[in-house]
Image (cartoon, rainbow, N blue to C red; front, side):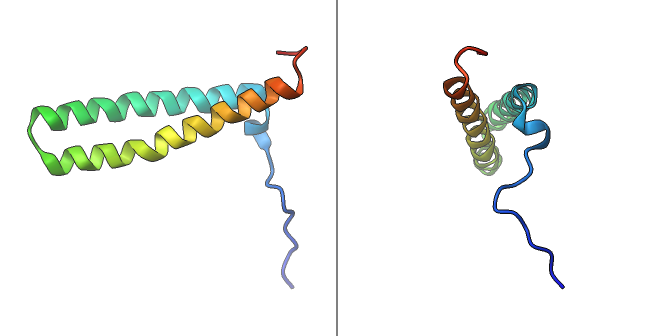
Length: 82
């Protein structure tokens, strides 16, 4: 018999403000690391590695934007605690 899954995922650490900030920080570090990889690939004039590095940055930027949106949403919900 299959378990019923709730429609909302478990928030865990990501539901807390500290978890969101931690997630944003790790995303920012990953973007910095990927941008260094892009610079190295451009310096070596390797188009395939450059394209790979740029494609790898896109999900990182998207995840950082999602975390920022969650942080802004939390500020709007609780303006006195922000």
